[in-house]
Length: 126
Image (cartoon, rainbow, N blue to C red; front, side, top):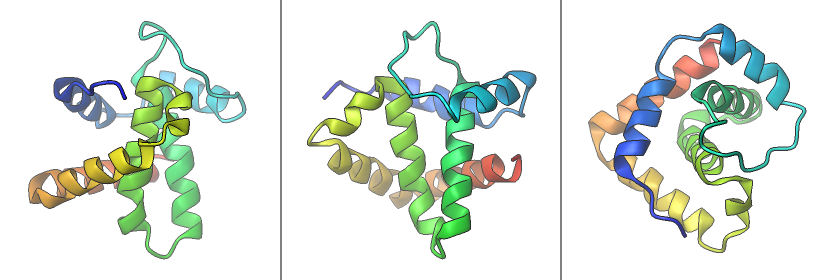
């Protein structure tokens, strides 16, 4: 599995906390119906990721009584797919890596709180 640059993940999480823009609206309408494929880094933007997160988290919130427990896992899955392409899901270690990342983030009170605030902010903007 590809090495994950921790500074890249931090920058990505920071960019997701920025207010919704017109680019986010355009991305949400185009990404929900298109098959996701790995894009070059220059083509990707955080608006696309926000749209994907919004879609999955909104569905989860509507269908799951334990949203706060499962939402961080969904967020990390989407971030990894966005960063490395959807084919990463086929990797044997994918779920183990997701679980490790979520566990590490949630063990730190500050990071866990930040993740939950990020998730709530994304879902409320929809």
